[in-house]
Amino acid sequence: MRWIALSLCAVMAVACGKSEQPAAADTAAAAAAPAAPAALTLDQVAGTWNMNVANQAGDSTLLTMVLTATADGSGWKMKFPDRDEPVPAHATAAGDSIVVHAGPYSSPIRKNVQTTIAAVWRLQGDSLGGPVTAHYAVKSPDSVRVFRSMGTRAP
Image (cartoon, rainbow, N blue to C red; front, side, top):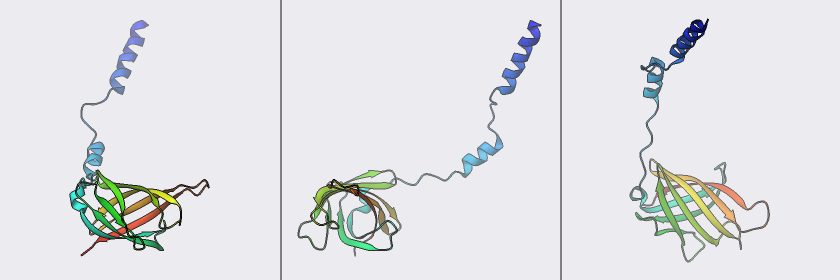
C-alpha cells in the first residue's frame, strides 16, 4: 500500500512540474508586448516653452506662463505674465517623464495664497505637458488641486 501512495505522489510531482519549454502562447505574448518608451533627458526639453495651464478637463485655460528649461535641471524658471520675477523650479528626468517641483510661491490662481507645485511632463511630439498638482497653504479641505498643462517650444 505504501508503494501505491509513493507512486501517486511521484506521478503528481511530475505532472505538476514546470516544463522547460515555454508555451507558444507565452512566447507570443512576450513578443507582442510593446517596448518601453525611450528615456527622456533634460537636454531634449532645454529651451523656452509657452505653456498653458487648464482645469482637469482641459477645456478652460486658467493661466499662461513661459517656462525656461535648462539641461541641468536646476536653472528652470516659470514666468507668469503679471509678475516681474520668474519662479525658480527644479527638474529631474525620470524615465519617459520630467518631474518639476517649484515653490512655495504666491499662487497666480489663488490670490494671496502660497502654493507648491509638482508636475510630471512628457514630451509628445513638439509638445511638453502633463498633470500639475498644486498644494495650497490653506486650512480648508480644498488645499490640493490638479491641473493639466501643455506647451509648445517658443520660436
